[in-house]
Each structure stands twice: as structure tokens, then as C-alpha cells.
Length: 605
Image (tube, rainbow, N blue to C red; front, side, top):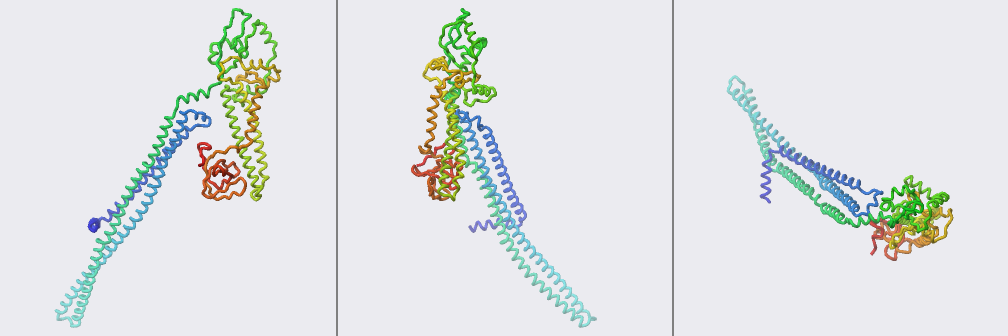
């Protein structure tokens, strides 16, 4: 260690006359640190801009509400999953920018200020020591000039004394005066000599201390400062690389996720989804029978012709592609074989028959179709698609009913709490809201019954898959199996097609299918707490709650519980501790973490 110190001291002594150059070099080093800091800052801005652009791109191609049906296809889900992974990928670049800002930019900025302060202090001490040496040197020069001047004055006084002493014309008093003057000058020269010698010794000592002690110490501090700066630069460069390396595993997971969702695409499943989505439920048409045109007056009407809704000329023009393109969208009325009669008799019957009176619902549906809006009962759709839409609508209404019932239960419990603890609130203030909820439930139940009636109607008309395809219409079967009804009753039984045509159905069939389901729908809401509610998340108690009131549960601070019913707007959250213990706690007393994947995905142990 001593040898290293001696070597360092020798190296520092070699720079004792390069004070200005060292000052320039250290300033250049600090400027380089600031330059590197600016470089990292610009790199961080680039990462942020890149992440922002990636996020905007992912957001731009996210599915809209009208495109939610696309999620049932695996290739669409794979693309949207790729967008989500790309969003996470962008988040990692934001992490790069954040880490560079916190670990490099902020650190180097603070360090640069510290180095500037330390450098200023060291060079201030060096300048101060240099000024002291220069002041000592000036004082030594002053003493030297005084000593030289006094010596010259002493020599002149001695010469004057000798001249006066050799002159016989000078009085003795003048000679004595010249002698005293010479002695005084010699004494002053002697004092100047002593003073000069003393200052010279002092200056040499200070100069030696300056160049061998003070300046080396200052230079050593500057050297340590410079080495620390260089070391800090190396650490920053290493951090610059480590910041990127830290996110590589996460980026790899994002890329692996993209690969996995791409491999999860199932073409056969997607094609099956297309078939399931667009199948109409119509049965294929039967064979077209031969029509004998040899007997003009006894020509029979084709069983598959559209003479009930189209003229004979239109039927002839469209007969070529009728069995291939029009059959899913027309009513298949196949009448049983009847005795042939002259065409003139049929024409007379047509002229004397009364026109069909459509009911208001059929007129309204026809108007709505012409205006471009869809009818409420989805009658513009094929049977299978219509059944799916009605079932989805019923499910949505049932969810709304359940939500209203949950709010009603919560308000009822709140009212009970207010009754037991009047200081918490007025029980009568809850009654208007309870009445409003009761009206909403009643309206929703009526709406559900209406759609369930339409659903029963569709399910009653849809053919069973095991039955062979027939061309006989439901209308003909019901007319043969039930007695005829009046025209006024027929108006309420009409089922119209998208183009405004209609088919008749008996009300007894619809009512027989609607009433059982209506009864079932009424029983379905009698006991909403019959089954144990699934968990929808977890929560952590922020404060202790004693839970003295009925329906509440006591919790301790920091306790973890399962959430089975979130706050419905009444300030209470329903939680569960285990299979036997559950109840309500104030929402403000807990921190809730709802499961984002699916309700009931979290189960307690």
C-alpha cells in the first residue's frame, strides 16, 4: 500500500504544474455525463412513443360492440388475444422508459450536480493554495528588493564617510555625522538581510508544503472524483443493458402467448359455428309433382307453387331457381290432394271470396320492415335464428329481474337495520325506492312472459329433427285437427313473414305452451337464496366491523373474505367466510378485488 501511495504521489507531483489542464479535463468529464444523460432521456422518449403507438394500434383494432359476435370464432379470438398481448408488449416498453428514467436519468442528473459541487470545492482549495504561494513569493521579492536597496544605501553612505574623512577642509562634526550615517545605513542593511533570510526560509518551507503536500492532496481528491465518475458511467452503461434484459422474459411470454393463440385456431369448429349461426330451421322442399297441361280446363295447381302470394306469371318466371334459392324464405303450404275441378270454378271462388283482414300487429310489422327496423318478436328471422334471439332476450330480462330483486333484498335489509337503529336513517325513506323496484320487476316479468310466449310459439312450429321432411304446412294440419274459427279470431292468430304474408295458427296451441312456462317463470323468483351464491371475487377488511345487526357479519382488520354479492348502491357488500358464515359488511370497510374472468371463478377453501 505504501508503494502504491508513493507511486500515486509521484504521478500527482508530475501534474503539479498542469492545474489548468486538469480543470478543463474534469469539466469535459462532467459535460460527458450530462451528454450521456440526455442520450438516455431521448431513448426513454422513443420507448414511450413506441409504446403509445403500439397501444393506439391495439386499441384501434379492438372489437366494437357491433362486432362482439365475432368472439365465437377461434380465429377472431386469436386476433383479439394477439392485440391484448401486443398491449402487454407495449407495456414492457413503458417499463423500459420508466426504469431508465428512475435508475439512470434521475441518478446521473443528481450525481452530476454532486460532482460539480465537489469539483468546485477542490479547485477552489487549489486556487487558494496557489494564491497563498504567490503572495508569499511577492512578499519574499519585496524583502529582497529592500535588502538590495539598503545594501546600496549603506555602500553609498560608507563611501561618503570615507570621502569626508579624507577631506581636510571638512570639519570634524561633518565627518562624525557622515560616520553615524554610514553606521545607520549598515545597520539597516543588516536588518534587511536578516528579514530577507527569514522570509526566504519561510517561503521555501511554504513552497515545499504547497507542492509536496497541499497540491498532491487536492489532486488526489480530484483523481478520486474522476475515477468515481468513470466508474459511475460504467455502472450506468451496464444498467442501460440490464433494463432491456429484465423485460426479455416477459416479452418472450407475450410472444409465446401470441403463438399459443395462433395454434389454438380450429377451422372445423369455426365452420361449425357458421353453420350453427345461419341455419334457418326450414326443411328442404319435397319433390315437384308433374302437372298435366294437356287438359287446359282441368289443370291442377302445383303443390309447391306460390299461387297464394304470387301470380301465375311470376311463378313461371321464377320456377327455374325456386327449389334452390327461394325455399328457405317462403311458407311451405302443401295441400292434400283434392278432386280436380274446372279452372273457371276456382276463378269464381277467388272473385267471390272476402279479402283477408290483417290485424294491427301484422300491419305494424309490415311498416317496420319497410322502414328498416326489426320487429320486436324477431319474426323477420328464420325459426332457428329467431329462437336463439328470443332465448337471449329472455336471459337478459331474467338477469335484469335478478338484479332488481337483489336491490330489493338489499333495501329491505337496510330498512330493517334502520328500524332497529333509527339513528342510522329513516326507514320510510327506503319505501319510494322499493315501490319503484317492485314496478320494475312487474314490468320485466310481463316482458319476460311476452317473449316466452313467442318462444313457445316458435318451438311449437319448429319441426322435429327426427321427422322426415314434409311439405304439408302447419296451417293445414291445424285446420284439419281443430274446428274452424271466425275471421275475428284469425286476426289474433296471424304469423307474418318478412314480406308481409301470413300463416294462421290456433290460439289454443300457443296458450297451451305459454301457460306452463309462465307458471315456471313465476316460481323461479320465489326463493332467490335457495342455492349458495358463487363467489365473484375477494376482499380485504380495512377496518374492524363488529356486525351486531341481523344479516351482518363481524370481520377483523386485515381479514380476507370471499365476495358473493357486490354493492348494489346501498353501501353494503355481501361476503362469505366459509360455508356456514356469510353476511353483509359496509362497502367502505373493505377493499374489493372482483374477478375479471367469470363470476364464480374464485372458490373458497
